Length: 154
Image (cartoon, rainbow, N blue to C red):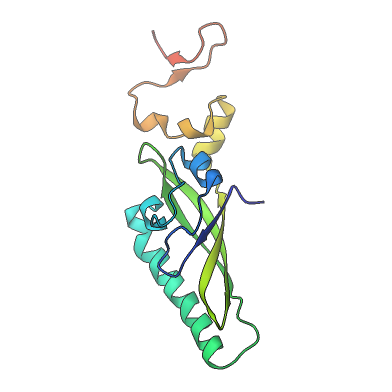
């Protein structure tokens, strides 16, 4: 199952809005033509570009050779940026859709990766979007049900 599905062109621009991506990142993702790169952590941009270039190259070679198998699938792990510029670790599954008469489009199926921070946040009863809250506060949160979620020690 995917948390978000995004359709992009060869230049990684959104072909249509993605409400799911917007919900996952807490950001607006409704602008057709916006670069998907704007949602990727800068440390992972080159990795994504290299991966897409490799896959598009294989697609182009298959097209030039007259292969009937033009669909190319693959996956990579990277980090996206949420509304607060926090990193969201994801795994991106993709397939290239195209015909000889039409430029290729890339269908991205994005799933969130769970990790230790996610598990700690879930155990504390915090929503996922606050899983990196420890970076922005100097004291841990109290999960005392009578006190509510407050900084410990207050």
